[in-house]
Image (cartoon, rainbow, N blue to C red; front, side, top):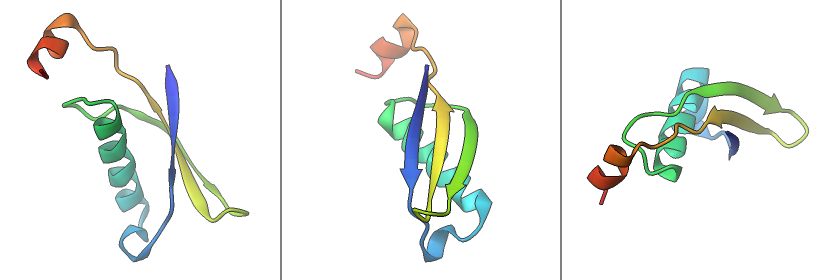
Length: 69
């Protein structure tokens, strides 16, 4: 399953690497995962002055769910 994040650039996110790091970290926290979900696409929307990151949700196994409790 694919999900998306909206990232508003600021002084700390001037480089594309910083934006990717924010996208990975936010996606990991949103999915309550210990690994970074893969970012499949990153697009700048000029009209809105934001980045949209599309990531793939990594399916959790039973052992992962028990370990996160």
